[in-house]
Amino acid sequence: MRSLLTFLAFALLCGCQTNAQRQASVTPLDHLPALKGDYFKFDSAHVGRPFHIYVRYPEGYADNTDKKYPVVYLLDGDSLFPILASNHLFLHYDDELPEAIVVGIAYGGFDPSVNKRGYDFSAPADDAREGQGGAPKFHAFLENELLPTVENKYRIDAARRILFGQSRGGYMILYSAFTKPDLFWGRIATNPSFFPGKDFFYSAGKPSKRGDLKLIVASGENDHERKRELALEWRDHWEGRAGAPWQTKLITIPGGTHAANSTDAYRAGMRDIFGLDAPEK
Image (cartoon, rainbow, N blue to C red; front, side, top):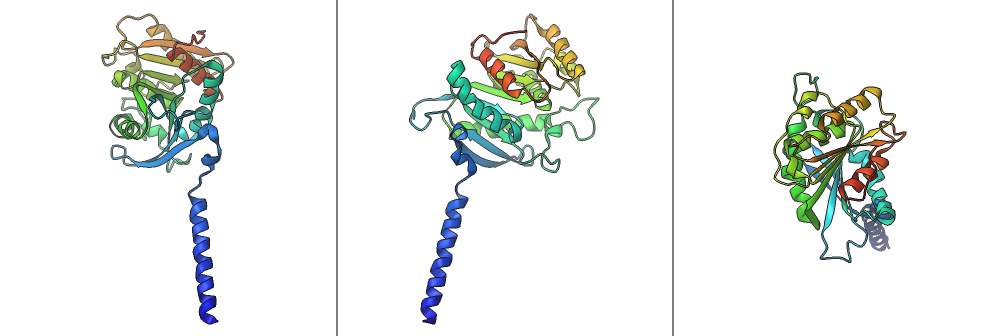
């Protein structure tokens, strides 16, 4: 009897472990079809820290096994991936925006002990503060580590890469455009920071090989006053200027504030990049 009870207890324990393992393999995103996709953790040698990478599959991805898709990389994926990746589905439905693979680059939290956006999304400059200056390492992570990994794992049309960032992430978009213009087909910087090293964003930038690159700056009409002024100054400098490595446009978001209108900026920028006649204000 003692042996039988021991066997039954062992079997019950194994069954509980199996159920626990089965439950652990199911993530909450498995039950959100607009965010259906993949996840992996990436330890970056260039940055020296891990990132959490979320991937949203286009609708019908599993059925269209020969089709390749545009790809959108989202900075600040901790907050922007759940908002913009799911919203892309409705832009596909209502605006006929092409479906895309959407990749969120996340830190795993907002706490400064893990979230290093202030360092990663700022370049070395004379006016850089302590804790800034990591943009070259972060961009090397994008170019040499993340993009090759993602584009080997998923069916991506690498000629149609897009990079999106907001505020400090918008600074990183501009930095990328001026240092490696050909790396992304389209870039959207919404309410970007211009410091440190503002003058760099008025320089000629690196030459490009492609003639179809687009750099969109989306600015909220009610963004912080100084940021709005800087965006308009940048627009006035680049608008119609010959010799730029990309086509530039500033799109004003009517009534837009600094952080609450990421979906509007994404929609307007993506419509312009894909030639869907986004309005210019």
